[in-house]
Length: 414
Image (cartoon, helix red, strand yellow):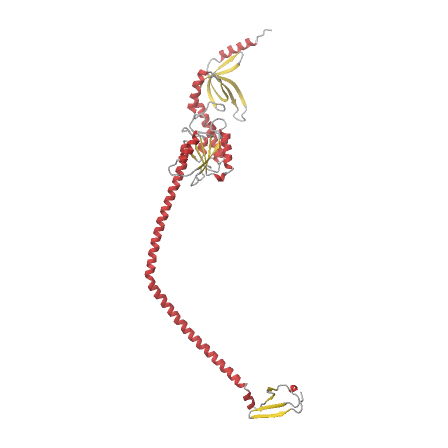
């Protein structure tokens, strides 16, 4: 049986591949690993995943030699605004190589940035479409900006120049407005943008009543560092955040997804500060306008009231005379009524007294004596009970024409 050594088999594979795949090929793949070596070479791992389920369909190693990589990387990043890093889809021109010791690999010669731009745009469209389907895309934009946005929660990198510029702009505003910014540190470039910005938002939400607005800022830098702001979790958090979010992440190219869902997007941290200052200046202008309107309104009202008082003062003598005449007439009527009422009362009481007088006259003892009655007294007291008279008591009996004195001989009660 004829056999081959492993080295001979490797050479056969290499010659066969060279003969069968002699040209360069444009390959669509996702970068799953990008590793830059100290000597300037770049080693990548390319993968292809299933459209559904994310299952791995293919994988290959690739090499970008230093002389190619030093031109390819800045060309790609300047064209796309995206770092040449793991997790993005690329269109690479490669040749197929096989080495007896290192196996199959692909040598990268060129890259087409338009493919990655298309994929990035597609991914942004998909995120925005998903947010719109969920009904949250414009929620943050629909929030009312506070009239005086002075308490500012700032998400930025600790010690970043952009945060310093932002605070300086607020402090040195020409109107002397006072702001109260507080930094919630986060990583503003690289793979940890999403994680740390969401964590900062959570800390702000835990003390929501202490803040008027949220400002997310980063200073100038490579636009290739902005991919962290194009993720669905971060966009969904910002879109549904209960405070207005202002972004100023230092770039003038296409907006990130975060810019698209934020309440207000400005270009730089300084512009974010200027926006807040302008908001307070607008409020101050409106307040001045209201004060002026109020002053004018009060002055006009005072003039109207002065005229009204003058008119009343002019009418007062005639009004007084009219009221006086009415009151005098009313007093005269009351006086007449009182006289009539008093006369009627006097008449009634006079008649009643006359009746009483007649009654008294009818009950007079003298009249009774003249009718034949008599009055008997004992010791000056009228006798009304014979049982109370002792025998021998002296009595005086009064008649109409005189008196008779007698004594009690015998008492005979009934």
